[in-house]
Length: 564
Image (cartoon, rainbow, N blue to C red):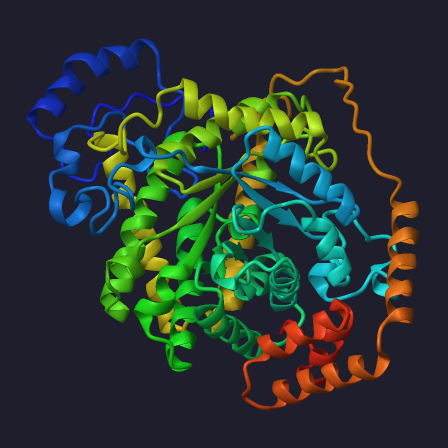
C-alpha cells in the first residue's frame, strides 16, 4: 500500500462486499465528492495485511448476506464465532500466561515464581535451542547456545529444578517444544509422579506441532512420517493417562512470525490441524475423545480490527471444518487458543514504542476472544526480556482486563458492519488456501507450497517498509538520531554453559549405566515396532537417561529430516 494521496474517486468503493445502495451512493455524491476535491485520501487503495480491500465506509448492505444463527450464533454455541464460552470474560478473564525461560532451570524457576507472585495465572516455558533440537548441553552442536534463547533441560534433574516449589496440580503449564515434546512431557510426568500428584490432575500444553517446523520455523529433527507417529503416540497416551493435558498446540504464531499474512496464518494452521486429525483417526482415536484436547496458538499483530476479525473468523471456520469433515460434536468443534503478541513486530529502534504496540495487539486478542495471552516485553528486539519488562508486559494485560472494560460484555465488536464484513472476507480467503492444499494431498504434501507463500508475503511486506509505503514508527518515519539507553543485564552464558555441562557430567557418572542401556534399547525397539513410545520414554527419564540420548536413539532408528 502507498501513502501517496489518492486521486478523486466518485464511484462506489471497489472493495464492497455488496453493491452500494442508493443511500450510500447518494452520500458519496453529496459529501464524499466535495471532500475528495479538497483533500484526497491518503492512499489509492486501503487494504489489510491479507490483501482484503478496505472500503471507505461499511453499511448494512455490506453484511446483508449474514445469517445470524448460521454465521454468528450465540456465545458457547456452534459455530462459536462469538466465543466458545457463554459468558466469556464476565466469568473469568483469559489466562495470563507469560512466556519465560532462560539460562538454567534454577534461574527460570525464580522468574516463574516472580510472575506467579505478580498475578500470572499460568506458566509458559521457553527452551534453549539444543533442547529443542535434541542435543544435550555437552554436545558439540550445543556449544555457544546453552541457555541463550530459553532454559536448558538435559535430564530429569533439570526438570525437578525448573518446577521446584510449584504446585503442579494447581498451575497449568505450557511448554513450547516440538521435535522433543515427548521427552519434555515425560520429564514433567516423572516429576509429578515423584511428588505424588496423580497424572489425572495435571493440566497444561505441549506445542508438539512438527508440521509448522518444516514449514516456517526449522527446529525439526526426525522425518515427517515418524514425527507424526510420535504425535499420535502422545495423543493416545494422554487420552489414557493425562486426560486434562492439551496434547498439541497447533501454531499459527510461528507461521506469522515467518512473514505470513493473517489469512495465511489461519489457513496453514488449520491445514496442519486437519493432517493431525486425519492421523489420529487412522490410529484409531475417536474424534470426540481427542479433538477437545487440541489447542491452538496464534499471533496478534498491529492491525487492530483485522486481528480481532481473524480470531472470530478462525473460530467459525474451525467449527465448520471439524463438523463438515469429521462429524465432530460441539466440544470437538470449539477452537481453544492461546495468543502471543507479535515478536516480529517489535523494533530495536525506540524500543519503548513497543509498549504501545503490545497494548494494541493484546487489545485485539481480548476483543477476539482468546483463552490465554502472552504479552511481549518491550526489550525483546534487543535481548531476552528483563524482569522489569516482563512485569510491565503482565501489567499491560492486567490493566486491559481490570480497567478497560473490554471483558464486560461478550464479543463487543459483533454487529459492526466493518468487523463482520472483514470476518467473512478472512474466512473466505483462508478457505481458498485450504482448498488448494487439499488438492495437493494435505499439509504433509504441501510443505513447499506453504513455505513459498510465506516467503512471498514476507518479501512484499519488507519491500513496502523499505519503500516507505508501510510506516513503522521510529524506523522508517519519526526516527530519532540518538539511541535510547536500556539496561539489558544478561547472564554470563559462558559460565552458565560450563555449569550445565558439569552438572550433566555428574549425573552420567552416578547413574546405573546398565539400566540406561536397557532403557535406550527399549526405546529403539518401540521405534522399530508399533508400541506406544511414551511409557518407554518415561521409564528412561526416570533412569536418568538424558534428552540427547533419547533423541539419538530415535535418530538411529528414524534418521533425520532433510529439506527437499
